[in-house]
Image 1 (cartoon, rainbow, N blue to C red):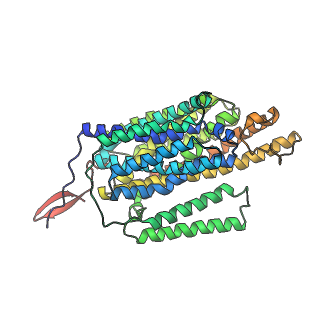
Image 2 (tube, rainbow, N blue to C red; image 1 turned 90 degrees about the horizontal axis):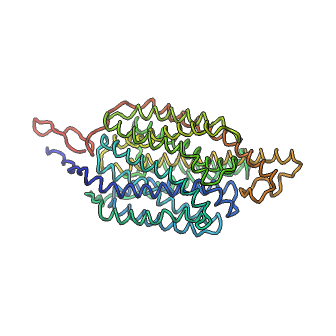
Image 3 (cartoon, rainbow, N blue to C red; image 1 turned 120 degrees about the vertical axis):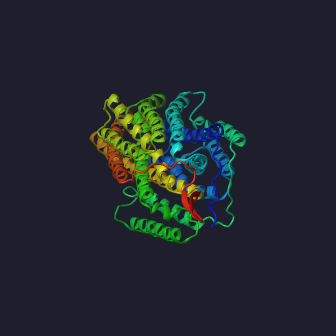
Length: 523
């Protein structure tokens, strides 16, 4: 019996840092494209004469496309040249970003944001896969600190840039989309020079297109139902029965396909294990809470409190500062100790507490109190999110790294997509009811054009605009209460994680017997 083939020689720190510079720029381009738009969305949707449902779908379309495509990109990374895939994703992302700035209505914007989501999903998972192929899980904690710093810079700087761009008459909100294009181009050129991976070809493996299609269709149908139920049709209706049953059928079929195919898009044998399964549940909860809750903060500050886009960006700094500090500190401490569970558990608990604080807000809440709540939310996200990826990556061999990373990113993005859709639907219904009550008190018919279907407050009479502002402010607290409950589920899942130490090798090692001697070889 021969010994297993030895793992590739690890890259030096200098080589890793050179390649990491381009990867971090890629990640920055992807993340800033979301955060720079978040504060500007009320202005964008108002100028394009969009509705609250369309506001939600501008965000949901990107998350949905990213969610559906993430596991496919992860599987492709196990089969083909990771560097080439990353460059293809950059081209898709940059082209869609450019076209988003040229739209004339919200329908076009939603469609192009979906295309942008395809590129964003690829960039986020491929960066993690490539770093995972270069660095061992234990050392990866240190490099995840760099990822956390980029996340913080993009999330802190993004809203500020978005606000400044939107408020500048000589630029306009279109530049919120144009901004990512030159960054993506520079990242493309940097990666061409610095990224060099030893690729292992697997030409006999096929991509599970059927499973990917069924998953995307099932999730999309479910999200469509969440968006329209209670507004366009009743909770108990034939539309509800048809859409929910169709979604269950599609996702059930996807599960059957994933269990039978040779190379599934979502590897069930990985997520059936205890720690990966718990990490998936926690990521789903953290994604729902973070994306679902945070995406509406910019809208709250602008519509409910009357701040400008720039001021709204400044007011979100406590949350972004929390992400920056906690991700950097936790990443370094994970690398030093090799232990990851304590930071995930603490992060999930802090996240739950932060959302519980924000659940009490209305349109008159102290900004200092809100800042404290947002800081806790950011701290919790920074400690938990990247470390949950480490849990899954630590449990799989290098050959399954792409699929496993894609799976964890898929469920996190799925959680965010569901969170935005559910909380957006809750917000739209609550706001509509509150506006109707307020207008009725003024003797105004709420069924008319002033019933809150538009976000253009400048075109409303001041008494009506004041009712709309108060309605949005009072309804937002309910969203954070839901987010706190979801985050608590993530905390419970984190408690049951196995307290293992992260491995110090890039690939999993197994004992191989050679004659009478036992050696360690790459799996």
